[in-house]
Length: 593
Image (cartoon, rainbow, N blue to C red):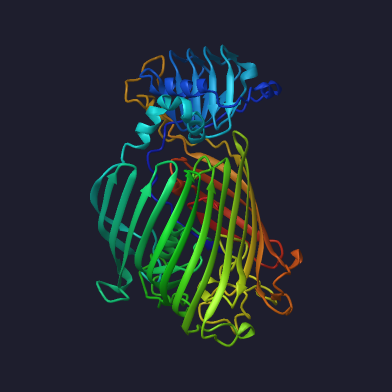
């Protein structure tokens, strides 16, 4: 059994909440009126949100039996369980409303991108409406004739916009065996002129693994400039100059988790290369949920040597070598499209996420990095290639405490010459198929890294697949585990900062949410070319499903839901396609996808 441990960062501001939600869904719940988006919906949200007497709740809360709220209730980002009495209206935004038997509401109930259950056994004095779109979509629909009604939303959204400057010192949000902790420092300037907002950032980069060295290996820079026209919709023109260390495959694991694994356990789940150059970008913004980006860059690529940064455990042991990469000057033209309708970015339970990317590259490779013998080919003076990448995710809330989420990833070579090593792909490890170890070949044919096996793989075992495909699915359920460490504190002020009263006071629960998850993963990589065993396939062919690596697993997750970084989970994964593989145990601080 092999243990992958990633520690959780400090949790922030856990919202007071009820530790357990009762699902009282009845057959009559199907009578909910799924209306469109009339203007009176906008007025209802505005009236409740702006009223000073509204009780505002964020996260999971319960209005307990015997308690009465003499007014309206606004619920945000969680589940509101009503067992007692609400004299006014209830508006839930990105939240669910669950009525227990005998609960009472004097006015209307409106859920925006949420659900309402249990009203058949409750006393609801008004109507029940559910709108499956989000608050942004609701605002877009009513903007034409009811823009005045949404001034409160625009004031909140625009509160930090405008001209100004600041000095920023931050990290690269990761820690790795090449840079150590990269530190970014420099000014940020913003200037607004009418509907145009200009933003300029100029950061110097210091790589702590190189000590205080200001050489080209120990220091770099990142300078960006962008002019954006329009707010919700518009265009953005920009460019950048950079001298940075780039990850080869940034899609498998978030940088934060890679950094924690490196710092704590001496395990780096990425490979890196030096990237130095400049680019120009054009971004077409359809909405906050969708945009299209065009870019052209001129950059030099080079290998990055691994250093010996500090790690808490196994410090002093050798690191996995950072593989050598192809070196040379490349011109890249890229097109990227993004659609993101998730209700939350860090902890979604509804919506789509689609990222599609195409890259056309041309360059002269000065030095070709070593490949596995089985895929060795003569180097070309000029390399021209086309590469695509598609990541599609769907999040489905089946009930207040149940989710079914699926993901499909396809990527790799489309046309032209062989891909540089910087653009190769792989599967296997905690971010893709956790039942199989990262960078370890299994079976007679290595369909994870597409190497020729340990005997011929270059040092560090780089990703060498021309194409990969990955499918992931998970079912999440409420563990209903009561963790309320502050319950003994009794009554607390409400979120408006007012003193608690017998009418609207609630008990501090500081609920730590708990979930269980069942998951399944399957995928593989392959080379493109003349058919050769199970490793190489013609460009128009796909490997058979019987050659895929697959696993199943179960996990337990804990978190407040306040940020995505507190999704602390313990997972157990078992390989299915290769039953001889041992069980893997993983600890993660982010969602699987």
